[in-house]
Length: 111
Length: 115
Image (cartoon, rainbow over the protein chains, first blue to last red):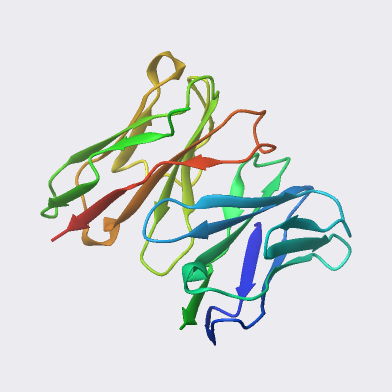
C-alpha cells in the first residue's frame, strides 16, 4: 500500500526564520510528487516534482526531490505570518493512478 | 477561468440521515476526484472518475457512500445513512491531464457535521 509520511507534524517559528518540511514516501512505480498549501479552505498548488535533483523555486519557496532516498523537502526562507498553513505532500503512481496524501505539516509563523 | 465549484459549503445532519454533495469541475478537465479530509489528517481518496467512468473506488465505503458523474461533467457524492465518523470536509478536485500526471485543482470543500 502506498504511504506518505511528513515531518514534523507541527512547527512554530518566528517571522524571518527559515523552515524545512520533509516528505518521505513508499510508492510502487512512482510518477510525481506534489506540494500543496492549505489554509482554511481548499489546498492550493505549490510544486510538482518528477525528476531527482532539480530544484523548483517560487519566490521564497523551493522544493527538491530525491528519488533514490524517496523523499522531498520544501524550504521556506524569510517566513511571514501569511505562510501559516498546513503543507500537504501528495504522491502519484502509475498503478493506482491517484494521489496519496500525507497528514500534512502545520506551520505557524509568529510575528 | 472558473475554478472547481462545490455545494453546499456546510451541512449539519443527524446520524442515519442522508446528504448529497455536488461538484462542478473546471471546464475540460476529464479527471474528477472526491477526497475525504478528517480534521487533522490529509485528504483520503474516495473515488476517482475519468470522464464518466470510475477509475478507482477501492476506498469508498459502498454500503453507505455512492457517487456518480453523469455525462462526464458534474458529479454528486451521497452518504446514506450517515455515521458520526463521516464528519469531515469533502473535497472535490479535477485534473486536466491524463490520470495521475497532472496538478489537482481543488474546490473549497463541503464541511459535513454529523450529530
